[in-house]
Length: 317
Ligand code: ADP
Ligand code: MG
Image (cartoon, rainbow, N blue to C red; front, side, top):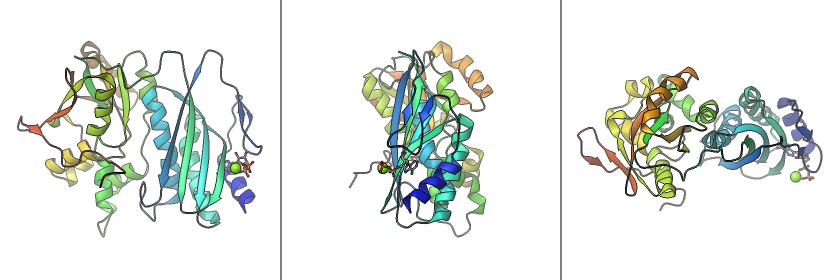
């Protein structure tokens, strides 16, 4: 059974890269790292019922399992190259495997990312992807290097995935297709991450909510951040379907956005917005790095806001 499933995955994800010496089919993959490059490596697991709802389209699961990993490479400013896929499935469901591999390939192909191996086992549905990307020495974007006075920016719009998750509870989900699409098929901001090399002082991808993730930059950099809730970028779908207070709550605490949050010296922020817009994904200035610690959110009334959800924490009571 296993061989047949692996062969199906291999067929759907076929790609050619000169740097893959041995791909799927041997005991281990062999790849060649280009001279003068370093590897950025990340791994993320999606568990059914925790990271995606039961009943999610298998193609969306395949897409998302890769997307969350490419988002980590994007946040480092790295260029994607190779991936491993470890799959745990309850039954030998060929249609499911075909769908999952197709969704994975849909996202992998435009990045010329090669699936070079993995593992297939029986058990509760769990999808783990590991990715490898290239960076030049000292070029990667880190969490630990934000500076007081930097401007804080974020790509795209925030809160859509959390809003989409809320919309899945509705009897008729069709009015919310755009928000649900943002939940199921997040867009990793790979081109933006690469464009930020040498410009951004620090960067992180927003997977657990803005306050939690910007909080990681603050903690690692030994600084604080002031965020202006009125500046948080909202999609037109969000504005159409949710009140301001909900939209702000989703943006600050909702997870699964996979936008990039980054810091830049104030004098670079203006030009950068225009440059990034040309890459098809604008970025919005939402606040500033300050002395101190932690993320402070200034509400639309000018008062400090206490978010009702401080980001997604797997181990919270
Ligand atoms: P082994 O028992 O030596 O670990 P496997 O039967 O697990 O070998 O895997 C055989 C080959 O298929 C290996 O090259 C492995 O990397 C690849 N492979 C297994 N499962 C997957 C998967 N889900 N996606 C991609 N490649 C896989
Ligand atoms: Mg194996």
